[in-house]
Length: 218
Ligand SMILES: C[S@@+](CC[C@H](N)C(=O)[O-])C[C@H]1O[C@@H](n2cnc3c(N)ncnc32)[C@H](O)[C@@H]1O
Image 1 (cartoon, protein in one colour):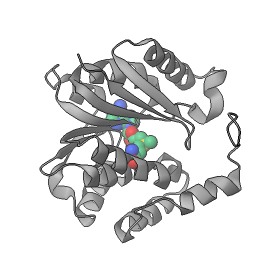
Image 2 (cartoon, helix red, strand yellow):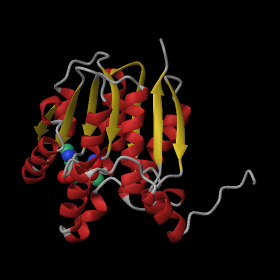
Image 3 (tube, rainbow, N blue to C red):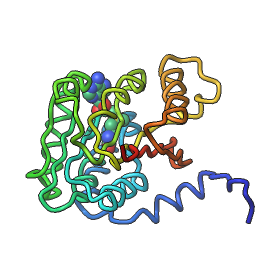
């Protein structure tokens, strides 16, 4: 036991994945479908992280949730499953074909009735929403260059106590020495969050890094 983190090598990472809770047949089918898409499989939320999203949505008692970047709907299925009775999830996806796949997968997983998918640039979808507290759970997982703008647009739309999970905050490990536009944007957001008096946060060393941000009570 030590305050130093245990290094996660490939074997331990596989062990974590093999112990991801709740991968039922509907989710395994989405995993297979996405794996058949070649390199694009890298876009899918990791099973262990998706399990965490469902638990977090449930712990937050989420009734109004939003996902930015939906792809084939893997994370969305789990968020939708974690919603409280009568809860709804708004998914934002740029690509109409991916949105159609997600819609089908959400239906097959039995949660299609509580999810709406808005096709188009997510920043426009968010800006079209009233700029007042509404959401109590969110998952940010679209293009990384947009992360600072997404954060600033999303936060005022979160209820006090609302929870936002932000994926890829390590940007494949590049975040400590950022050079690409994507890594610079992620690094900027990571610094902003730490300095932001409106929120409490924790950065988890899971998969490609996941930050949980909770809007403070006013
Ligand atoms: C990493 S994937 C999302 C994975 C998904 N959350 C999951 O659980 O598997 C990112 C998705 O964001 C979408 N995307 C990229 N830019 C976008 C934008 N400006 N607005 C909305 N969606 C966008 C991509 O088409 C892609 O499907």
